[in-house]
View 1 (cartoon, rainbow, N blue to C red):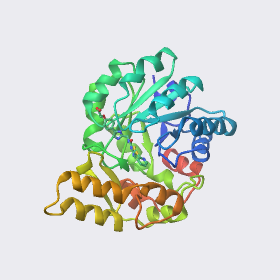
View 2: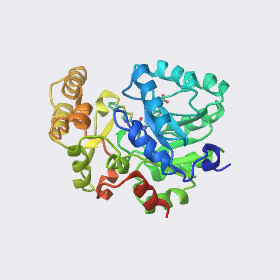
View 3: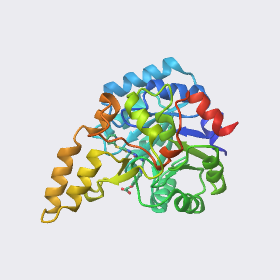
View 4: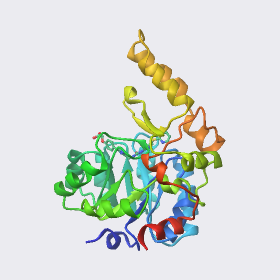
Length: 302
Ligand code: TUI
């Protein structure tokens, strides 16, 4: 069955879940425009997440999903909240959701994990996943190693459930390329960062719009949590620490953690563009203007 029919959406388009960012305003706008809005649970406590779910339900009667970011200290709470709030679609990211799968499936929840490898895709299918999002390293935020071009067809060959391509897609050409690789749908994050309904700081949006092809980099490989962001003063300092001679790995990690503490909030809320994590995909160079979610979705499919 096609992903649109499984989920009851008009277009095979997922708005990438973004912690701190994809909350009720963006999610309900994407869902109302015929895509799948995904609530980013990454920064939310159970109470705050419940509030956002209620807001979304008041703003749209269309399908939407809850994302459980598996590195969050609240992931157990949010996994339970999905059941309590009768969430129909759960998307997971940044880890292995095996321990929750049985319970979600018992409650009839449609589960769609993000994977960065064929091995995890196969494991998820065995545990009852309804579809897979295969995310390449072109994506913003927490990333794996493989590119979208190489990962998507290998996942498509390895599983028989629908595959959604993510990472490096920002326009119609990217959508067509994803379909050519065997994907049934696409997930976009960076393009929705500059959606009019996206409530991040104007400074963050302006940095995305101004970015060119080579302006993103991956920091934090040394910490085991590689994150793609736009280059700025903070990323240059991180690289200096990573390359510093005569410092142990533990010391480097401690210094990087100290430097980056709260840095994503600084980008999203405070509009600090120098000492902040401006998470972004490599496609920022293709993102040229602010538009409504509806305009973005129409430009991809019509
Ligand atoms: O999760 C993401 N992107 C993210 S999460 C994140 S966390 C954060 N957000 C805001 C502020 C501070 C931190 C930022 N960006 N994408 C989905 C994704 N999942 N990409 C790669 C993976 C992945 C990697 C390994 C999924 C599973 C996996 O498996 C590991 C295992 O245990 O098998």
